[in-house]
Image 1 (cartoon, rainbow, N blue to C red):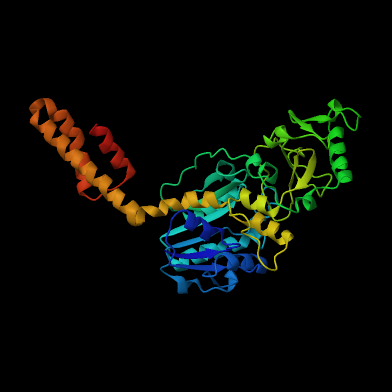
Image 2 (tube, one colour):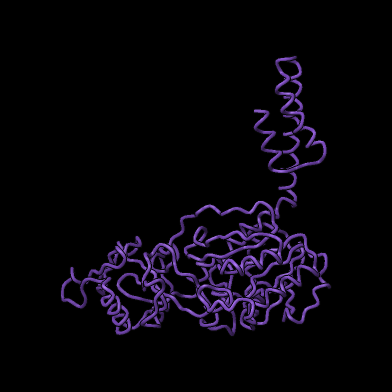
Length: 398
């Protein structure tokens, strides 16, 4: 498969294609962030990097099988200023439209944030399809709602894998990585954050010389803030909470500073979120953020790329397992999947023939069955191979 990827970032699309079992003949990427390109080249030296989408002549890629991309979303996002199509970043969406028009691919996939319905409708009108909304929380420990416009057939919501925040943090690993201490928020800043929670009435007691008074209630959960606390209970996730941007004392989302500790906040290019666990607050490590995006550990660890740039690139990236789930719809045109489809339709044909024969042998008593099956056989003979017809044959020949 020949792939054209716009706004490629750290090439999450290529990881997703490989994870979905799609054979890649050629992968051409357009990206201008030098750090994202470094990460991409470290993991995928075979990718052809072509730079700025606004300077591209996409007609040279005419005949490529698929165009994919997640155009910059800051102008559309509910978390942003909702500048919509007047925002220069949002206008890059039209580069995606231009690519689809010039390349004429069999398939396309565009990802973007949840936005006002009027903006969503404009995108749908240009691409000719309605989006499907998928929350990354179904396949990862991150709550990340995104819209996906695609003409790939059969896209549905993925099954919930039940992955929680406790499944990705280092504290629950048998062997913790070295250097975790540098991500811990200084105690005085932690106290300031928790003081703000007291003012909001979400914590009952603070700085009392009693073990009992060091147990705080945050959104209906118990969090032990004593330095010696934690142990086995913390390992089970009992004292694990997402903490919104520990670097900023006043930061809140929907009135909350901490979440319930099941799914993590949406990763962004700007914010550096953390966790309250085992008696301390710390920032997430880049590896934990990679896990939230279902990327391999240390995927963004590349020469010349700082932690700050790793966080930014991951916040701009895709949740790989969501994209892989969508791309699996392409496999119906590949080898083993195609062979299975042929076998399934052959079985359907045999079932219809046998049922028609059986009903015909019944004489007048079988005419009702013949009347039901004959139109299905006509549709089959005309070359129709739809899910609707297949299901109708299965139901009629039981």
